[in-house]
Length: 536
Image (cartoon, rainbow, N blue to C red; front, side, top):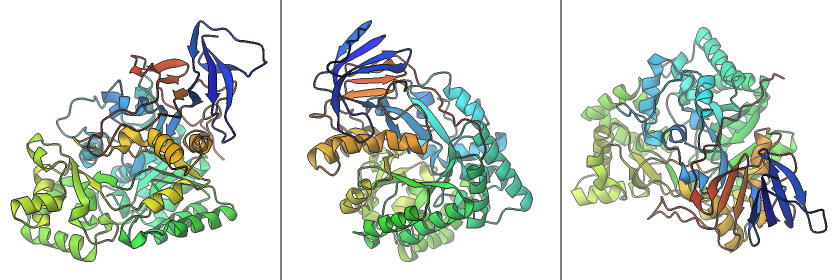
């Protein structure tokens, strides 16, 4: 063997009871597993794993590392958690497919998620198609990555920023772009239906695109139209749409948030159980925290963003239009804020793109407004304009009982939804996977260790239809994590969100140590993970 992992507690990802064994790795794959009494193995390197659990590498089903993987070779935020595969292209907005005309709009729209805005030269945008972006990853990155074709980016390419139905020719172009992305290796399609311009698409348009996804054996991953008022109806809409299109469905960061949904996780789970009983192919992901995270601009009513970022900034600078935006936010509840009237005390500024605005970070909009003796909307409006829409926020609107109920479900998987930008990002970016293992498995017993590992490994691998990942079994890729079940925990907190986890000393990708004895190596073993081309 190239590597012999001796006396490990194998938590193999299946959900079955763990067992002790020696595991041999050769040529990047799990070559042999030997239990007590089996013929012994030898290796060029032997790692004593007594006291450690050996699991498949964790799969982050909802990641926002689209540029971070290219900008930051170490990528410790994910590698140190034991993540060996991330799914990018989330929430309907990412950087392929684009052309020279639309790339600038995409970069500006999601600079709060990923950086990469105008003037950012840290990444060379030397691709335009999905295949070219995946080729760029194949030059070597920290962890593996799969990609979803982003429906909002596709609509921006074909229709622009207008809130109107697509013409037949534009719909044909969108179908072709989605098909090309899938044929080039994307695993499915995402939407961000509270983000412009993707939210301007009616269900009929989304259904047509999902039919293309189904024909290529991919899955649809929507951030649907509401996680607040009307959340259950929004889930029903996505289940119905996927059924009509014959498409597999994966619900992104599946939460029930805001006061209107306190204690209502059971309603969502009953809806899913009914659809599953009828033969639907559905899965979901969550992060194990109550606050959400997005950009401040995302909370605005969709009509304000029609025409793109420059048009929105002009509206914010106009007093009359800005007052209309405020009324939608604070009185009627904007579609960008999930139909719930804004509660400024729940909006904490987590990051700004302009360092001169750093005093806002770590405070709620209400706190900053009170310190300045002004109304909260005046503070928020100033931030949006002066930071050119790049401000990120934590939104404290979740419920612990809902988080716990949803993570128990049989189609649940783990996703960090980790935004790595900002001075004070959400701790989920650095802590999701050890938090599941330490807090929710060991401390609270919401899941057994074996169940928790299955949620983070084999279940997402099954959704991605990966034939050789997600289990510790002979012949599978040696994407592996060794952790101490007694001490594994997230180091990140809301006060110190960039703190690395504890209790995860070793992480391997293709049998190569990415984390060795708790230290990040210089290995860049990650590559694109592409859906094998094929049509139903």
